[in-house]
Image (tube, rainbow, N blue to C red; front, side, top):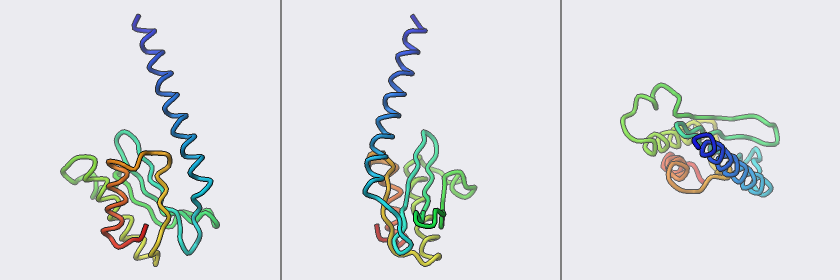
Length: 129
């Protein structure tokens, strides 16, 4: 009985993962980062958030920030507060690199919770999404 529940749970997780990848692929048709307006992609896991500003023409990451950095890990608060801090960091680093505008890529995730907190943090840092 336990084995059957575990297999069904694994199938459910695989279906959710493939659905998110389909949404991500669908969004990537429309979203592309140019040198004058690169792409801000947000990667969300159960524990961490990673935000990268990517120039798709050159295929390089211009700036990035993550909850795995020491100063963000040391913050008190929930995951949403840490995600907002990641947004502020990536926004500040992008401004220092001379980037004013970005295209926001939520990577198939819902624009809600931690993903929205990263976007709001980047806006507070002066980045135009």
